[in-house]
Every structure is written in C-alpha cells, then in structure tokens.
Length: 263
Image (cartoon, rainbow, N blue to C red):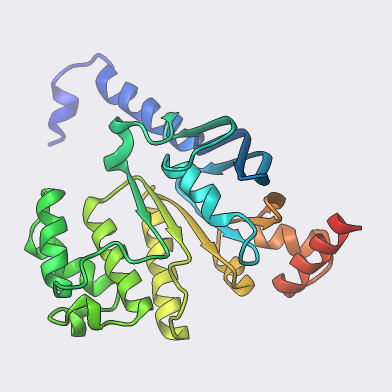
C-alpha cells in the first residue's frame, strides 16, 4: 500500500516545493563569473572574463600551461584576490563560509600530510567531515590506491599524492569539485578510471570543473572551456567543437581556434 496516498487527498505541497527547488538548482549554473579581472603585478592574468558552468556536469577547463587555468580555479574557490568582477558559486559569493563544505578543491600541489600513511590521512579527513572508516575505504578504492593504503604519503609519486587529495575531497561529498590537473602523471588506465569516476559523480548531480593541458581529455567532458592567454576562446561541447572547426581531433580544433583568435 502506498501510504503517502492515504494520508490526504490534497497535493503534497512540501514534496512539490522540494521538487521545484531541486529542478531550479539543476537549471541554475553552479558557477557564474561576470567580468572577472585578475592582475599579478603589472600583468593582467584574467582580462574581463565572463563564463558559467552548468550544474550536474563534467566541464573541462583546457589550455596550455600558464594560460590562467589555476588562477581561475582559485578565484572560484574564493582564495584569489580579484581586481574586479564577480564570482558566484552555488548561489552565493565564492569563498563564503556557508559554502566551504559544499566545495571540494584539489590543487596541483598535494594537500595531505606526507608523514602519515594514506589511510591515516583519510581517517583524519573522515573525522573532519563526520564520515567513517568504510567511507575512507571506499574513497581509497575509488582513486585506485587500495594497494597503497599503508604507505606513507611522502613515499608516493606526485600523481599518487594527488589521488590521495582527491580521496579526501570525496569524503566530504561536496556539490562542486574543483580539480586542478588531477590526471597529471597518471598512466592511461588510471586516467580512464578517474574520468569514469568523474562521470559517475556528475550522474549523481555533482558538478565538476576539471583543468588539464592534455587536449585529448576534452573528449571525456560534457562541456569544454578552451582557454588561451587568460581568455575563454571556446565554450561548447566536444561535438560542437569538432563541427565548428571541421576537425575531428580536438587538439587540432584548439589550434584552429587559437590561431583564429591570434589572426
């Protein structure tokens, strides 16, 4: 018997309102950036940049090293001093205390403790996020480090340390993941497995912004932001990129766009 039907013949307004709220959140961008300018010394790193990132998607932020990807991600995380413009994250200003638990930021530099083992790190972060031992075991398996759980983080490679940081972020179960080059230094199998994890998280309504300078990773994204010299030169799906440039290879598509902007 469906007990929810027998409680009342009136519409369930609470359920309806909750559904409308969820639908509105899914239709709203997770990240909205308006006319963002960031300077470093006399150099303008991000010049008057406007872009948005849809909720519940894997968006790739791709471009060559030094083009401003990490600066943009820091601005979204709320830890970058900005000259002007606005950065709205999950409905409010970037970096506000109320949203910190909802944003998982994995930097290029390891953010875990080198003198602790992988599992000791994850138990520590599990305690901070009120998770448990089982959640830590799932997270370490998700990032492909089950065989390294008793190894000191300081003895791991750079790519492995990044994966420990990603596992720590998974424990918090954030709504938004900001992942700065998480696949650098990984072999093709591990890269494939991590991208499968990213796709799975997006299918659960999570939003992922994943930066990379490896252009073939664009094909794994729902949407692609191509960046060059602090500017977004393309904001489209991989298929749209191919159609717009007439190139099947996404690296060639980027070159077509980059050269067109420079001309």
